[in-house]
Structure formats: structure tokens, C-alpha cells
Length: 315
Length: 307
Image 1 (cartoon, helix red, strand yellow):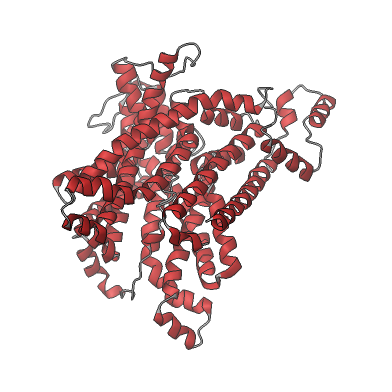
Image 2: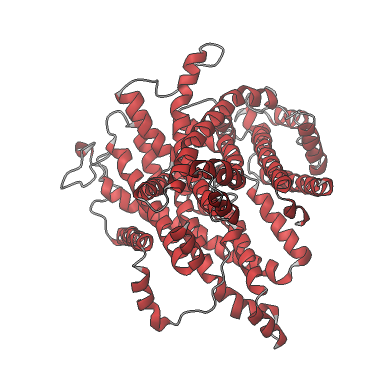
């Protein structure tokens, strides 16, 4: 097990290294000089050159890469070109919106998907199962930002229960802030719940077809217990994989939803940074998200190997 | 199933083995048989309708969508304007038609990019194994680590908005999907006796791949292509919605939704038409993929039928 974890860890480092090279390289070949963009059209050549020196843009490419990665490792993400503050500060400011939103959406999607999947698996082949599968099939096809528009129209424009857009801030108005996250969370959660319930249902059906389930039934275990204690527990591995990936997706994938609701989250930060050519912000936030995805995959792999020793020998 | 939420439905368990290819003579009877599968029947019908709509829009739309007729603006659905009109008086049905062409061509070409680069790479990895296989699959892992839509937004924003860059941005993420699916399926075929026979007969690895591996994994690739096609439609809609896809005077479903957002208070029908078009298309493609999988892979059919 230790050897397995070590091997996986080395692979994680290698993947991160290659990913960081890609992020750095892509933004390196971007047209446009950040110093020129920062200072505007009227800036003198001298001022631009001075700023380029200050930002370290005149250094050769390798030292610049090394100092960027070195900075990331110690939590120094650099200074934003447009906001003129530390990127880490911007990220902290924005993550207090994105993280609760992602957690809320994930909780919502799980609490819808699990009961629905259990219901469908328990009554497989019946009209209830067919209805659930049809509904989830449609759910998978719905673009979440379109769903968000409908929610805004219904609850904000027509019923006026919640404000359509904006975020008051946790410090000023905690209750209002939570309210502002409800519609975005629902918009994000429902399509995810559709995917999750489909995956969970198939995992449950696969678990239910195993011999130990027949044994459990043969010895007289109640059907509810078969489903909850035996099948669900064994179906959890694929479900946890999807949950892990959905969480990473929700952190990153809120970019469009945050634009619909004009929420000041990570997604909106990166979107604005891209349009303003604030490359250091883009580099650092993308890298942060990549680290999150890779770490989640790593943890899932470890959890798999812990649950199923046969996997430890594989590459 | 990993990667599904990132927009890629890949599963190593989806590997199936098909023993022989069909002759064209039986294609019609195969189709008649396939139409008995409900998912396939609904899926192929919806998909054919959308494709037809896209094709017709090349030569004809009910109204010219580049012409603004302000007096007709913001009408509800009627016989003259099936889906109503937008804030410039443009006919929404014509725009949905025009949008279908842009949305579908971007998604379709992006699938093509994935197929033409990913499949050869997957075949190569399966045929050569060893370090090359390792390098290619770890490369796929690296690409999967990037949140797909976010990276697509990054690519289109940096290299300029527009349909071509949208195709590239979506296509790049199709490459590792097809590479993985191809490799997984090809590996299973390589284990089979008839491949051993072909090797014993002195056929080269590349000849075996073309003559035996590819025909046997073609079904699987078609299923994966329909899935990626539907995900491409959603991705294109997202990109166009944030203004990075189709550019005016051209339009796409995502772009129509972006314009609808500002008019949500007074003209909600503007959001309805393109939204339903997206859902119908994605749903149609997903059903088509499910149906094809059921038809070509008896194992999953049994699993679905008997649990």
C-alpha cells in the first residue's frame, strides 16, 4: 500500500509539472504586452520598459517559470496586473463565494440524487423507474445557464422572492448573501443531480446483480437493508468518483453561472482576468483548479486501492 | 465513468467486442431492427430533424435574420412568426434554424478533430504498449486535469472569439477521450485468438490495426462520437453565451440565450426557443447513443433489462 501511494504520488507530481508547463506556455504565447496593457495607450516607452523590468518580464523564460512555480509553492501567487493587489488576496476574497456555492450545490445534488437512484433501483423496470430515467435523461440535456435564466424569470422577476442578481457580501448581510446563493445553487445542482442519479442507479444495479446480494436475500435480509446496507455501500466507489469530480467541476464550472447572477466568485474573477489580459491571475487560478482536480483524483485512487487491494498492483 | 461531469463520458467498462462487420446489403434490415429500440427510434428521429433544419437553413430561412424590422419587435408566437420575434424584430424561428447550423457544425467538427487525432493515438498506444502507451495515457491524464469548459473559455478568450477557435477549444478536449476509449477497446481485441492468428500469419501491427482492430471497435467509437457531439453542443452553447462563440451577424443558440437574458423581464419567449432547441438536440443525441449502445452491445442490454 505504501509503495502504491508513493508511485501515485510521484505520478501526481509529474502530472502537475506537465500541467504547469502547459499553463505557462499557453499564456506565454498570448499576443499583447501586459505592461503596455496596464499603462494604457498614452504611456511612454520608458515607463513601459520600467514596468516590464519591475514585473520581471525582461528576464529569460526559464527563471520566470521557476520563480512562478516557486512562488505558487510558498503561496505567493504574484501581483495582479489590473487590481494591483496580491493574487492570493483576490483568490481568498472570491473563494468565500465560490466554495459555499459549490458545497451548497453539491449537497443539494446529492440529497436529490441518492433517494431518486435508490427509488429507481428498487423499483427497476416499473413505471416509476421509467419516469425517473426519462426525467434524468432530460435533466442531463439542460444547459445549467438556461435553467438559471428560467429560475431568475420565475423567482426574481415574476414572484420577486429573491433579488435577480448581485451579492451583498458575508460581512454586510449574511442572510442576504445566503439567499443570493440559492438560485445559483439550484441551477448548478439539478443537471448534476440528473447525472449523479443515473450513475448511482447503474452502480446500484450492478451491485445488486452480485452473488453476495443473492446470499443476503437467501438468508432473509429485508429488501430495504439489502439495498441500503449491502448494495449502496458497494456502489459507493463510482458514486464517490463522480462526487469528487463534480466538486472540482462546480468550483471551476460556476464560471458561466456566476456570470448569469453576477456573483463575485472565482469563475467571474478568472473571466474578467482573461478579458483584461491579467495573465498572472489567469495562470494562478487555473493552476489552483488543476491542483484541486489532480488532488481529488489522487485521493479517489487511494480510496479505491484501500477498498480494493487488487487495484494496488496496477499502474 | 470518470470524467463524466467534466463533459466526457469515458468508461473502461464500456469495452465490448464485436465479432464481425455487417455487409451493406443488410443495412436496411439492420435499421428496421434498430427502430424497435425506443431510444434509438426517438433519438434518430429528433437528430434527423435537427440536421434537416440545419441543412435547409443553408439555402432558406423563413425570414432574413440580418435584416432588422423594428416595428415587428417582441411579438409572441403566431402563424407569421412561429416562435415570435426578438427585440430587433427578427424572426426567432429563422434564428433557431440559423443557430442550429452553427451550433451543430462547431460540435460536429470538434468531434472530427477528436476522432482523427485521438483514434490513431489510441490505436498506437494499444499496438505498441510499453513507454509510448504510458506517455500517451499520462498525457491524456494531464489534459483531463484541466476543467474543460474553463480551458475552452481561456483558449477562445486569448486567441480571439469565433467559431474556428471554439472548434479548436472543444476539439482539444475530445482528443484524449477518443484516445482512451480506442486504446481500451483495442487492447481487448488484441487479446483475442483471431489476432494471434493474424500475427502468426505475419501481418504487421499496422495492418492488423486497420483490418481487424478498427472494424471491431467502430461501433463503440460511433457511440462515443454521439456522446461527444451532444457535449459539444452544450459546450458551444456555453461559449457563445459568454460571447466567445459565433459572432454577429451570424448567430447560435448560446448567443440567442445571451441576448434573451437582457430581455427576460419583457420577452421570456426569446429564451424559450433556443433553450428548447438545445435540450431537444442534446436529448436526441443522447438517446441515439444509448440506443446504439443497447443494439450493438447485448451485455448492457441484458443488464438494463434484468438488472
